[in-house]
Length: 98
Image 1: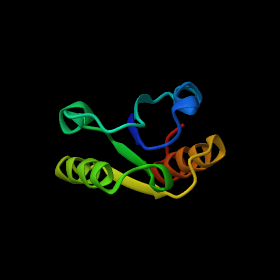
Image 2: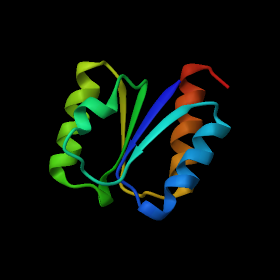
Image 3: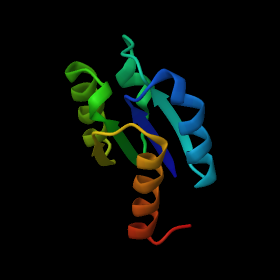
Image 4: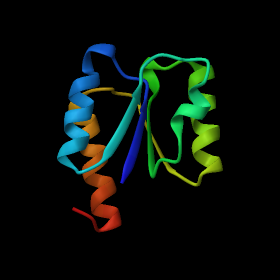
């Protein structure tokens, strides 16, 4: 399964990747807006949007691309490792994986 995380803290990127690898997910993390974000997102199965640390422009771009590719979108106000664990656990529980 592929996961794209948009938002969050720069210092947490390695932690986000470690948590996703524990769930056997391929992950891309974007904490800052780049000019070619919509090309870099790809076709994820799940988009996690940490809303407290992301600009409106970046959020709109990510959500539009995820919707085009029919990805699941999860919005979370907290950008902690615990919040990411809970999202992945819930997503795996709902999809019958892991």
